[in-house]
Figure (cartoon, rainbow, N blue to C red):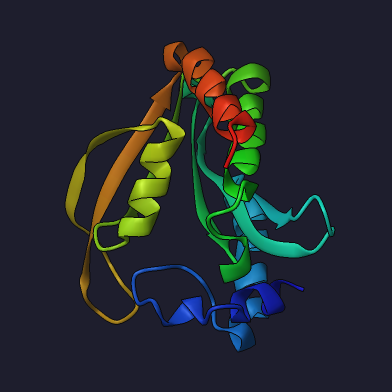
Length: 172
């Protein structure tokens, strides 16, 4: 099912994303499960409420329990699920669990400098841009990745939560 989501829109062709090519989804899932076992990551598939169809995935990772922080990332959606309420609904669930159950003091989001759609989506959630990590990582193609870092902190969560619910309730 994740393979079909990855195929929708040929998003793996965007060189700055983590979306796997359809024939690489099994390895992508295996890596996510290895991160769960070895690094404490928590991978999730994302289903459309109306149909139950798997339309993407996301995960908690870089979980730093002593410092009550984590990162939400590896988020991508099938083309048909983009620009719908799915990301907002998903982030409400993930952020509520992070702040209200895990008692995080900060939740981070990171994306590639050239992934403007992701940067806009993260900002639309109410996350604030913390900065840019220059030459932060070497990408699979050998290029250097500048990483844009965003976060939401504990004291901002009530307002961000209100904002996200407003986005879901407003007429489209």
